[in-house]
Length: 212
Image 1 (cartoon, rainbow, N blue to C red):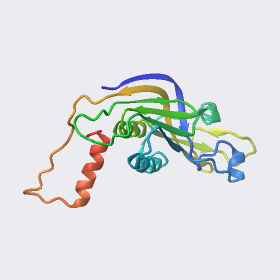
Image 2: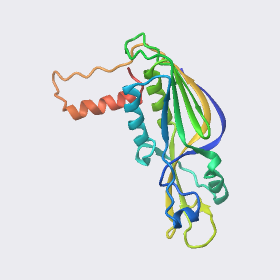
Image 3: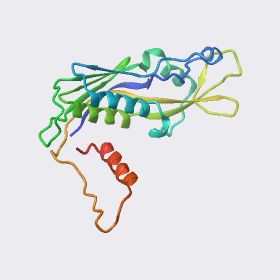
Image 4: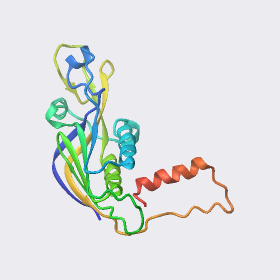
């Protein structure tokens, strides 16, 4: 079961295409992308996950859009560098990559600026944490007025303004552990053949639901 503690307001993920001022746009300044770092365990499973979730955490199509309007002052406050998440740091205790019903998949996440910190006993707990992180992220569309000389970022999006999609998440800390040791699905293809692509789609859905 998941236990969550909200600790602050919105933060945004570092991305090369997120300008914070009009000056950034004029100079075509690109910021650093979200970085991933493993501490304690060197794992091919984690390295593959870093690559996969770097794509997920930089692509708005994976995320739900916020339904509310953002005012100019709050948009400017949001994109202050002190609210930027630059790195995901993962601490894994065990180098054992065996996956069975006795594998410890518990994890904790601390989302703050500039780092998101993930702690897990095994790489599989770290994988579940990455999925929770991705599902905690939403798209916020901001309109940046490029027609005047002021460095203002506006929340209302109108024609003539440059729209920027920002991936945001709440500053929070949470702990999660599976309720059941075995979490799976049965795909019966005896009477209804399924293409490999459909089976892979089912596997992606299993990841979303943290099945093992």
